[in-house]
Length: 449
Image (cartoon, rainbow, N blue to C red; front, side, top):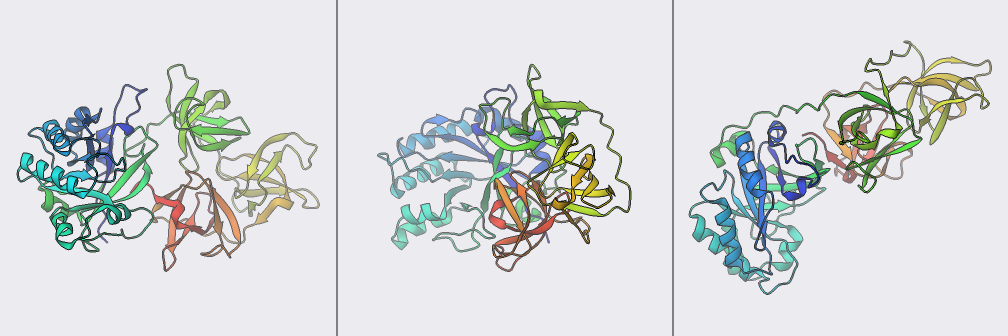
């Protein structure tokens, strides 16, 4: 199967005002085939457009632009400003009129959209112009008379529709008559070189050769996943440590770490009080307070002794102790779904000395909360990766809520897709620790594609 041609759309929202750097378009070019850049809204240029537009070109990315139509401003003045910002460099991809606003200003409605589009056409000549919209917005706001509706048909469509295998396409276009499809707003921002946690991602309706032919650009090459910076490794010392979207407690949480998790430091704020870290086991990435991070050697932990039986933790939290009994001090704890290998047992088998596979945390744990794994399926080698968007996502024995939960995945966990049911509502997945089962597909978004 030909790979999908993919690219993000960006605006000033992808650039943090607290940092001097902007979007890393060189990194984006390693991961994406194109980019569509916001030029402005109303009578306001996007504050980053004059920087983003030339730097994306310099990085070698085919570029399109879009203008967020705003009914509070005269449509002709909006068109004039958009054209003036582009000048003679109008990009390789179309100019898209973004039609989704709900301000109900004096220039609301499709007749003013037409005025806007006609003005743009008069200013840019034969440059291709397209329309960005969503199915239900268009249904509720587009003209109803066939002749009026057909006017918009000669503009190619960029459609927004999430959590579906095929986009809903409104009339006058037919089902497969879309040029670009914005299929998610939850792409991995860092992977694509931006400073926002999430990013919009889009597919082109065709393969690499069709993309090159349509826009007269070089044939897209298979992306080379951009390397993350390497850094020192740390162990989490707090029982639970929030991972945030920025270096401070005012930033929203994107997940959390637990005691003894191992993370790699990717960056630091100016005084070193916060580190941007990535959890080794699943790639959860964000900022964490360095107060609760203990630096460790970068030498990988020794593997567990071969041949030991493996167990899955069934309790939400399970202490690992220095001896076979609750009176011994704790070395740390396991969480539900962790996979451990048995090293030895006490006389009656009520306590097992175990080692966690992900980071070699070792000690004694009550066997009451350890379920023996009779067979461990080999990890898939070529399945698509997905990122979990739910705070806690149950993993079940089959594709439906009637099946028993065998574990769960956390927000921003990275899992591997193994299969999908007939109506594509449930995916069979495997976590990095080997836990395999079915999860609701709407909470799984493609990662690193």
